[in-house]
Structure formats: C-alpha cells, structure tokens
Amino acid sequence: MLSKKYHWSDLNDSSEPMFTERIPGNEIIFFDTETTGVGLNDSVVQLVGKKMRFDSTGDLLPVEEFMTFINPERDMPENAVSVHGITNEFLSDKPTWREIAPKVMEFFGKHPVLAAYNIRFDVRMMTNMYANIGAKFEPAYQIDVLKVAKKLIPRNAVQNYKLKTIATYYGVEDGILFHDAFGDVIAMIRCYEKMYEGNGTRNGGENATDCPTIRKMWSDQRRVINILTNKGYVYFNRGEWYSDQIDFNRIDMNAFAVACIKRAGVENLQSLERWIGCA
Image 1 (cartoon, one colour):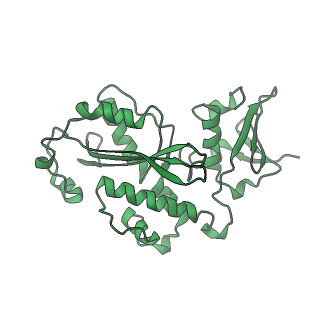
Image 2: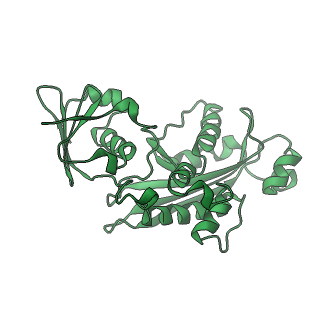
Image 3: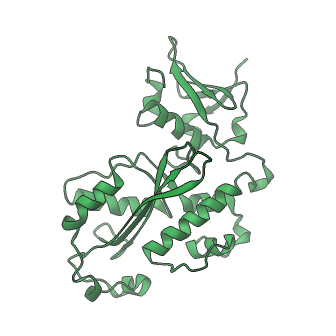
C-alpha cells in the first residue's frame, strides 16, 4: 500500500535545490556580480559567468566564459569601492548596459539553470538590469551555493558563511581574489564540487542529499503522474508524493521536484499537477 510522504508545500523552496541532476549534456551557469550597492536602484558594474556542462561521467567541464565590466553611468559610492576596488575612473571607458546587454542575453539564453552565492541578490540585480531595457530575466531554476553550504557545514565548524570562509574550509582558496566577480565564481565552483563530493555526510545520513535519476515520466487516466527513477517508482497526485519503494527522508526532495518540473517542461509544481503527457 502506498503511503503519503510529502505535500508540495512541505518543500523548502522547489526552485532552489541543493544539486542539479548530473545528466550528460545538462548545463549550469555559475555567475557573480559586483555592484554600486545593494539597493533596488543600484547597478551591476562587473558580471562574470562560467557555463559548465556535465560529461558522460557526471563531471563538470567548462563550456564558455563571459566577463565584462559595465559603466553604470553614475558615480561609484566610496563604500562600494572599498569592497571591490572598482572605481569611476576604471569604468569610464567601459561599455554601458545598453551597449553590452545583447552579448549578456546571448550568453545566458532564455531559461538558464543558474548557481550563485546568495543567488537571490544576483538574480534581483540581473532582473532589474533586464527590466531597464524592457526584457525579462527568467532562470529555469536556481541553486544558491550559500544555502547548500549552510545545509552541509555545521555552524560550529566555521566562523561565518562568507564565500572566503567556506573556500578555506574546503581548502580551495589558493589563488583566489575574493570580492572580484571572476575570483568569486572560481571559488564558488570549487566549493560546489567539494560539497557534491561530500554530500550525504551531513548529520551522518548516507544519501540525505541524493536525487534519484528520472528514467521516464507519464500521466495516466486518473491524472496521476507516474515517475520511474533509478531507485523505484514515485507518484504525484493532487500535490502529494507517494512511493512504496523510496524513502523520501533519504533524498533531496527539492532537487527531485525541480527535476520533475524540468522533465515535464512546466513552470512549477502546481502546473505539474495539471500536466498530461509522457517524457
């Protein structure tokens, strides 16, 4: 007999899984911004992105890199300069946002899978920049490497959760210039890979952050979504997840939910409830 395990509202945030499926060919963009400040009206002055692709063994390989400085057409506050060292003089001959936007949009594409450190800030900044030229920044989904760090590293093991501290914790800080978008992206990728290598060690659980691989998905006449994975069958109906073969407490349900959404080609779990098809 099947027993109810999860309702979709039990998930922390299905748009922010800990790890994405390592399916060969899948791509993820690690990116970072440096800005004039943290307010709604502030601007991006440095943008770096590294597009990575999973190979046949699940390893991340670099595909493409994008880096630019952007003239914000405004004075750079001294407190921002003290953080990243980017000055008005340095930016004076750099392209404006309207000039560089086409190249940025080409790199990110329409619905990218993104990873960043405190990703909500960077996505908000990019969303505002796109809006300034009448465009939309619409990631397929987002991975916050900061949140992954907080889930996997006990609070008493580190002084804080700043990127430099986490990079030092994992021993990958060598050669990194922090508070520089390029350096931060490199550090982020190094940390993310270390986190993935060690995932499942948190609280002693063996596969606590594992995400089953979806082999086939279809909806039946009862409007139940049937999901065949490498670990067994899962069923989704009326916002509820069911299985008599998988212990949901031992897998990353956030990542699994996002994988189902992506497989079905819908926007969210509410849309998945109404999905009809086979994938």
